[in-house]
Length: 185
Image (cartoon, rainbow, N blue to C red):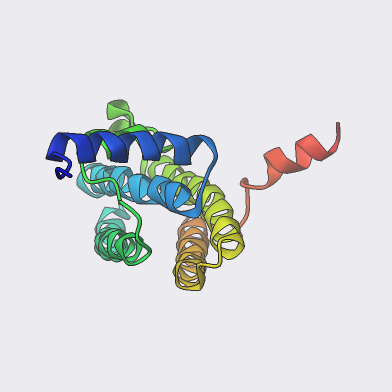
């Protein structure tokens, strides 16, 4: 029996990935998180590079911390997916395909408060995928993955709270209002 070619192996990987994303698995949902981390890196850099105003020095330092944390989380999550016998996305094309964060070149012209508010919204969006991935990891009996994702959720929550404080808000200000409106229907 002949070994599969590299192209055949990659084609099989892409086919399985498509199947896993249509009937989500913990691995597929976690790949969305990995992809969001990649796009978040670009967006965090955009804020660090373009923030202006009296708070720009402190915000640049905070965004460098967020960038450092992001790089560490991206690397850890890729390794964890491999530990779980999953295939993390490994091309920019794949990462962009599975990210749910939106980029906008004009964003860099926003004032500091709007830049921070955009980052808060991104962390909150990421948490939607984290919550789904945790449930799937628990259902699939993947305790190491569930534990890492739970810690990551806590890290996002801390980042949201600290960025909200910069805006003079409580941790969930403006984030749960859409959900509350839906409950009124």
